[in-house]
Image (cartoon, rainbow, N blue to C red; front, side, top):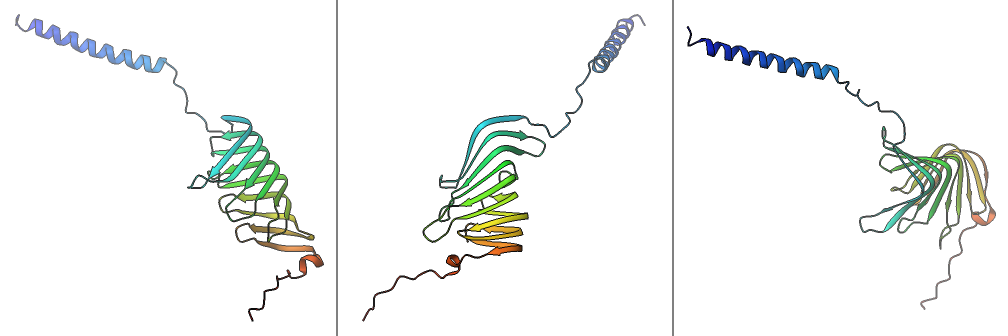
Length: 204
């Protein structure tokens, strides 16, 4: 019996040590306040002023340029809010376009820009295209597709012709303009006149 006493004492001390350690760990965990899970709110986490962003094609050629007075990034939906936006589309083989507005939201990984407040799109004239201007309270630009559209009332000025309507879609690659509900159309005689064809020499 005496030979077992030291062993029993050792077991009792080990059990007391384990119990004390568990109690101390549990007490420390309850005593130290843990930070609650971070609430995801629509608050900016990054800012930039007088910024310029350029997107290039796989060959490294600049196809879109975005400028603004002030930019804010929102982590909850990974969107950007831009003040005094200026969006320039310079796709190869298509007329250069310039879009401006008081504010804009860029989302969908930069694939969509919603311009709000005195939104204006200008297509520069080219060798075979007249200047084109579209104004509305909101214009949605798809930079990679080179498309702009709106569901709101819009005013389209194509050279000297003017069209007012509700709902518009313009594809700068195909140069096709759709106005879904026109209310006032004024076609200039100059624009309605077919383009003159250059006389071809008589092969005979």
